[in-house]
Image (cartoon, rainbow, N blue to C red; front, top):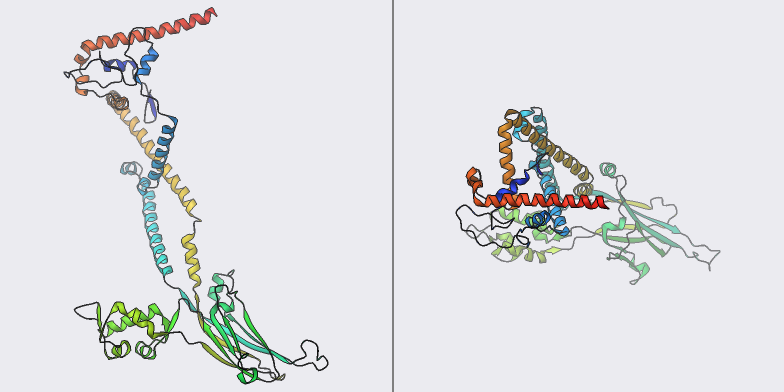
Length: 478
């Protein structure tokens, strides 16, 4: 039985007779007419040549190839599954053939949707690439950090000189928070607020040296890799007089920023900036003043300002980062002068200051989550599989329709063409190669070898019937 399309057809069993010549084992290749034939040999598969008394099962076994192992079958199935899945992933498999579109004009709506989907996929992919490029650059947003500096005073207790707290003391608090940006707050309502200490690299409180001496007038905090972030700082000292103090706050810039040498700062109009921004401003100055050498683009011809700063008449552009090292200084700290008041009648014990800080743009987190999101990927893949299955079903129906239509127009001619196709497929599967031009003529089957083939066929049939009769008699006797 041979499967063609979605219909079963039976191949005439005596077709094996036509490919069996004397001296040629079953399953071997058939030579062309006129070609010399060698001596009879062992048939393919190692079975002996057919002799009288050889059963039909042995003859059929000698004609067959060795059966593939279970592992080979599994490997072939795995390869077929991979190929099938790879094929389904192709965009071209979603396209309906032109012939189907002509038969079903309504299918043009599907093709329009497919073109729109392709355009939408391209737009989304382009936006994803833009977001990936944007995430590579620092995305900062300027915000206001409100700094609260307050102090409390605990007077001495005359009736408890020996108890704790009998000495007058004051306590200084340094706290702060970001002023709410309503647009960012609404965008991310559940986001945790950033700690106050995370904005600073170091904090130094300098008290009056005359009151607390050279060894106890400084309070310092410096960031370390193991620093635990906090919402504020507290300093407690004994004393009952007003104390002048100075707060030095060093912002933690990310990426690091540097203060420029005064000469370079005046030239570029930049006071404190990142290294990349400084180099970009330098390059803009070079282009504006046409300092790049016209013959050797690698060199920059220094004007009088560059000569004063870099101390050379000519330099390579690649040397600028190295030469900038000596011209970049740590940024200036934020300096706040404050008076710690111990007067109980003084109501202004809290001072507020607003500091400009840079924080991560809240859109960056949303952009990252968009790139990493796979929420809809499974649904899209499922819909794609349904589309592929539907298109495959339509193509199969088209094949069946063409089959039925061709058969209805010319049944005889179609059956003849189909039998020719089946014959070619059978030869390819059994590795039997012949000359179709010779085989289609009647004289080809009147040669001497056909007599032996007919005899073998009838002999095998007789043996088969004999075995069936013997089995029937044996069952009757038992």
